[in-house]
Length: 376
Image 1 (cartoon, rainbow, N blue to C red):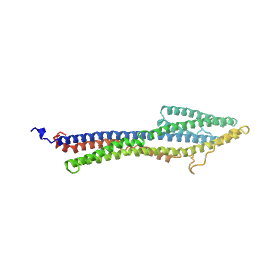
Image 2: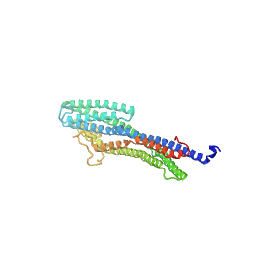
Image 3: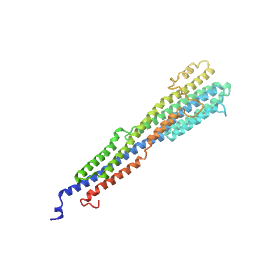
Image 4: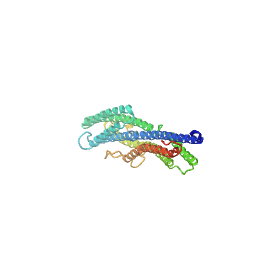
């Protein structure tokens, strides 16, 4: 009898089953690694852009508005009290300090702009208008120093206030574009909850296949648990646990976006409060210089009082250039950076996948060797 005739048919069938199982396990491992890496890198990439660009740009826009409003209030108060705005020392120092702070925040906004070329053009326009605004304040300052030109100074100061309102409106519009960019980074195909199926299904398939292979080998060869395949199963669970961190990062990123929205109410009240105080001071100056025929103008300036403060400490002080919500800003920035921290998952996943492949090969080697595949 030939060698083939002496070989039981089930031997060849078992060997083919082992080779097929090994191939499926290696193939599913590659697919699981690819999908897990894609999701982890996708979420981390969006969170990184949000933490490094969108969130700082949004917060800088609030700070710029706050500094500009405080600068204008300082100018109105200084001129109304008979001081100078652009002189050395005295009340004018506060105006110059706040304008300098606003310039710094606009620079920060430009550096972190997430709205593309459209946002860059807006920032350039705002910076040009800011130069014009400071020029008007300088003209008002020069006229207020001459009692006979004080009325003209009030008119120029009102023009400056109108221009400032335009600047603030443009900053608000620019912030809206940054918020849209943050929204896109928070809600996209990588952060969508349905994306979990993209990486979860291959890992579940890998785990089920490992368990079924373990059962098959135990029953077919009547041996104890295959240790390499058991370790491969543990590694697959580890891959699932690490990839699940992407869902946690996506959740943290969404919380950051929600926190930015919450900050909006507090910041808008502060800006409105300072704006009202500056407008009230300007109205007093108009009334002092124009007692007849300016009633409508005075009424318009004093008509926009802010709603009650959301907290007793909401109003800002002109004694410091630090933004009033510095602690809240720092917390939001920290949350965004926490969401962007991948915790080196993108490095650990390939290591685990490679370990699974090695363990699968090691687990099948002795069984295949029994059927003549010594080189495996």
